[in-house]
Image (tube, rainbow, N blue to C red):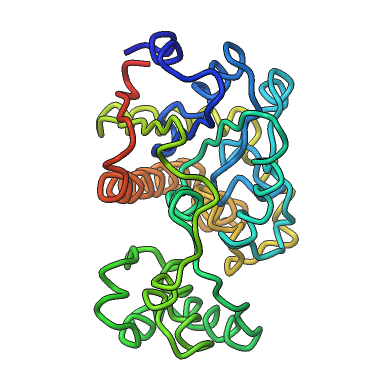
Length: 296
């Protein structure tokens, strides 16, 4: 199904949600919908909120931002922490602004919190955050996993260090597991049955080819200059430093990789990230309308 037939099936007023793996064409579809039906495009990607990595996080270009209103992109300092709770607080006034939101991104947890609700977990003390960062830096994610109960490990992506550290921090800070907190979840801000929810399903080989091509395009667009601009304040423990390709570009600038090696490692990381996204979406977005990304 091409973009135009998809657009013709959408309601003129209901909020639109667009989820999918990185490079699946979400932003392009959002722009087409905004051009045809109006609305404001709202970011639901946990890495595109940061201000320092426009190119490597594939944030919309300035030209694309001129074509339609875009919100919650690049509005957070690279040095800051930013949680799903922060995102919900930021999106809340947008949802009552009178503009139809077109919420687009690859962070499934954001969509889940928006449409299913989020537990009101207290802030994590700085000393526990520091301990968590140190364990990650020392490669001791297994130590964190050992502390988590089976229910928690079945609910989180245990291959994602940030998800594991978040669950560990909550347990250390509150004495309750993240699963127990989720059982106390408040009502959602937006009911899924009141939205047009689209999931862009992407065939593996098609997406892998796009990811390789896109990284070459990122290099040509100035990804190395972007990495150079972030080099002085680079901290691998920051959430913003999880931008796919950022560690590899920084390693190249430090002389640890050749450019070809850095590109190859970054493309591999992109494909692994996309695989985790696809797995998450398939498990949890059965109620969303699936659209073949390679047919748009």
